[in-house]
Image 1: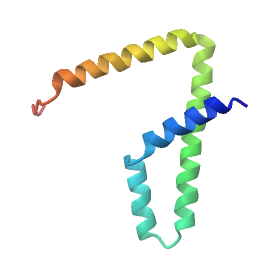
Image 2 (image 1 turned 45 degrees about the horizontal axis):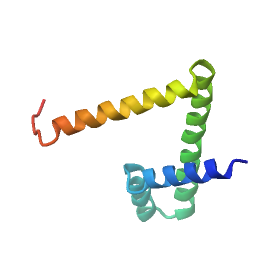
Image 3 (image 1 turned 30 degrees about the horizontal axis):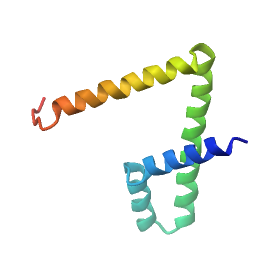
Length: 95
């Protein structure tokens, strides 16, 4: 097992999930529900299922597209989105 990849994946997903809408929904369900374990198991299984879909999709894509090109496209997309967000920062135009 690649422990460095495992740690990087855990850290990335853990930080990305902190404070997002899924965590807030889980918090809300746990506070109103009678069984916190059911909420925990349901949310944990949902995260595992979505992660499994992402891993399978990633594996399928890498059969067609080189990982080098995937990194290049992802990097370009992040740069383009960053520029777009900076360019539109402060605008309050309602469409």
